[in-house]
Length: 375
Image (cartoon, rainbow, N blue to C red):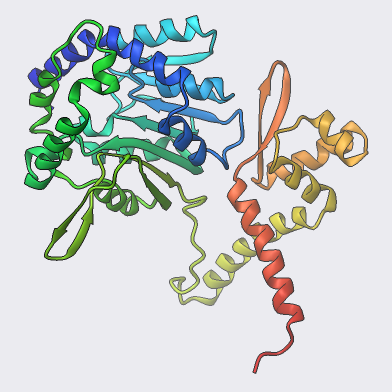
C-alpha cells in the first residue's frame, strides 16, 4: 500500500472512531451471527487459551473473547481507533493487552497463540497472503486461525455482483445497515469505497481465494460459513457460483511439521539404523507415558479443563508430589504445558486434537483386533 493510500485510510478510520464505538457496543450487547459463529469456531478451544486479535478496531473481537474468559492480545495500526478500544475495555472492566502495529508484519516475539482472529481486516490489506503467512508463524501447532470478512467491493469488477448490490439497496435500503445507523458523526462511506477499489481482494472471489492460500500454507480442517441472510447464486459456463457478501472461516495449524519418512533415508546401514533408533527412542518415551493409567486419566481430565497439581492429586487420589511427578512426565513428553497464574502452575493440553486422535485410534485398533481375520 502506498504511503499516500495508507494515510488516506488512516484518516478515514480515525474519523470513523465515534461510529465504530457505537457499532462495537451494539454487537457486544446483542446476540448476532458474529457472536454465534465465533462460538461455533471456538467450541474445541479451552477457556483461558491465548488469543491474538488482528486489526482489532474498536475492540469488538478482543472484548468479546476476553468476556468469554480468553487471554487476549490485540493489534491495530491506527492509534485513534486503538485508544477507543482501550476506553471500551476499561468501561467493561476487561483485561486486554492492546498493541500498536502493522498486522501484515507484526513485530511480536516470544509468544505463541492458540487462536488468531481477524474480523473485517483482510479485505483492507495490500498483501493479504503475506499477512496469512506471518500470522501462521505466531500460531502454536494445532492452533486456529479465524477470519470474518467479505466480498465487500467485488462489485467493482463483477457486473452480476454490482447488480446484486443495487437490488439489495433498493429492497433493504443502504441507510438501514448497522454501519449507517451507528454513523453518529456522518462520515461519508464513499471515501472508503474509492480507496478500496484498487485493493487486491476487491477483485477476488472469496472465501475461495482464502481457502486456496491457506491450503498452500499448510492449514488443515478449513471450514467456511456463509453469513448472509440470503444466498447469492448466479450462473456461469461452469455451473452455479455461490459468492457471499460476508463469511466466517476457520482453519487449523498442523499439530506438527514432523513427518515420518523412512523412504528418503541414506543407503549406509549405520546411518539408517541411527535414524530409526532416534525415531524409536522418541516414540517409546511418549508411549511409556501413555502406558501409565494415572497419566492417561490426567490427559482425559485436561481434555475438558485446565488443572493445578493440587487438583490433579484430588483427581488421582494420591499425594501432591506423585501428582506433580505425573504432570512432569506429561510435560516432558510434550503432551502438556503449564503457565503460572496467581503464583500457581496451571496445566493444559498442548493439543486437544492429538488426544482426540489417540482416543479414536485406540478404538479403531480394538475393533480391528476383535473383528477376526478378513477374507
